[in-house]
Amino acid sequence: MARLVDFASSVPTPVTTADSTVTPVPLAPAGVGLAFAGVNVSAAPNAVQLVATVGVQAGDASTNVLLRFLRDSQTIFYALYTVEEFYNEFAVITIQHIDQNVAPGPHDYAVSIERQTPGTAYVVGPVTLSATSIAR
Image 1 (cartoon, helix red, strand yellow):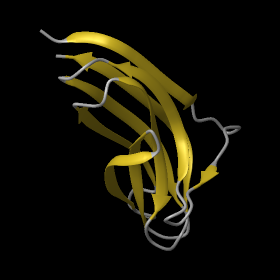
Image 2 (cartoon, rainbow, N blue to C red):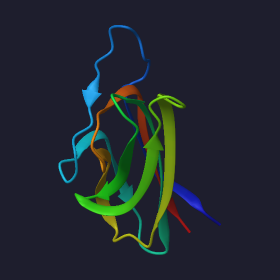
Image 3 (cartoon, rainbow, N blue to C red):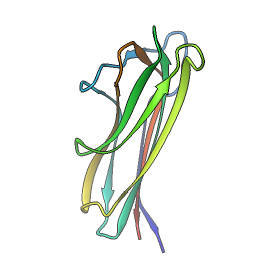
Image 4 (cartoon, rainbow, N blue to C red):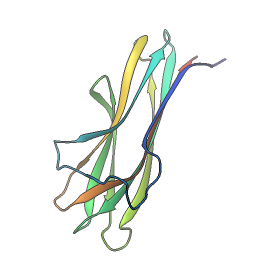
């Protein structure tokens, strides 16, 4: 039977308002970290469920953004998303990943974003990251 070992979450921008901070999305390979969460992991077999939500806005053209999950500064998963300038100028993107059989001990997880194509894009919020450590 699975058992919950640890849970952490990060909500650096919980609500989008007129006063909220807008973060430009840099062109690859210069990604920017958006949210961070550390959890303790038990001995194998284990898993860490990661869920991130990022609100983005296309700037002057449609652009592809790459979201990455990192464990201890190493990429473990990524997903590409196209933000359309006219059709879907604002997008709230949710990605998730199950990190399996991780070395036991404390680990730092992060979600980052970068542009893969020319143009501009901005992180406008919300931004959330949760990490749930599970022993099996």
